[in-house]
Image (tube, rainbow, N blue to C red; front, side, top):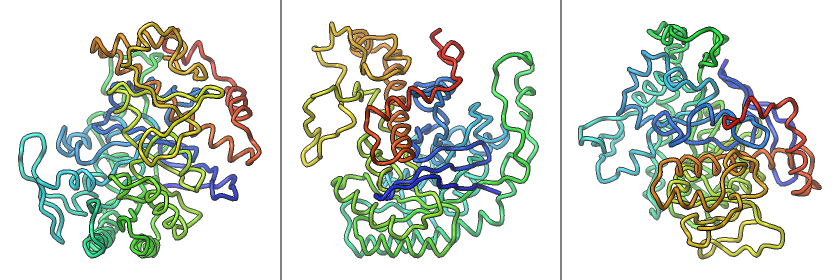
Length: 443
């Protein structure tokens, strides 16, 4: 058994409130997944990730990157450590991408053939070859709950003919990926002996009472799940064809790839909407690599179940923070042609106006950063190039993204009449038995 997907509530606009059950635990959807490229969500430790958000639930699922972990430290090393969960001490679900997008982004260093992609490492220039079978072998060694078929992401803009040919290659690679996975899924590290099984063998100096990482012990009979990736560029007819071809493969879930690569936002929205019309309603639907807080909220309300993006931590490292709009605040488009966000304001903490600002980033936010630190202090850390500033900025942005999805889930669960104020009250009341004195690392 790999996954089960249980839809609990739906809206007229297509939004779904659901639960995704994976070997390493449940995931409430729609969900935003923080990106842990090299088995780390940059600047934020795992313990903090587990407790982010208004209800202390933390990130229920994160990503790791196949390309980067293959190059360093190597997937075989991670296999010997018991898989990526044990390697990075993360007990909750994980997803790995196929490596296809990273190879696409290295277009000047790669050569694509029907067999796969030959590329040079961005680290040392060494030559490597990545095929569908190789991508599957690497992802099985990593052992994430969800893995992705190997695909080619076409550049933007690209002609219809170029996009069609690339899509055909993606479909052929998806079939090869599925065939290899079916034959080798039993090789996942959960089912094999490891030098570091159980966790206590790696940390014999720890006492039984210490709060150290313990991997799940009930993985017998569980296996990874392989998702397909719909391509087709910015052409609605190709997107439809790609979705139809992949649905025929009857995979456990489907992703929409090749978006957020420079196209206008209205085009992104159209491609998502056209693809959702084809994808099965009873399986999880994942849009890869998006986006700003207002974007992920919009797509979730359209019926997208899973989203990921490096933006929360990447923006934080450049001083861009997100906050809730204040009552009566005028919101202007952040970029030409982009509609104003009703759920998020982008603020540049480097600005001089924050030098003596004693307010938190977001007075409506209850994250550990907003409960303790002022804008003035965060600006000081950033302009002084203090590493702590990057960590605190990242913690807040991740909490903001997770809280956005929690609010959307509450709205879907409680109906379209739920106001933002009611959603906020619901979130406050949903704390239940959450004990801040235990969960808050600052107290």
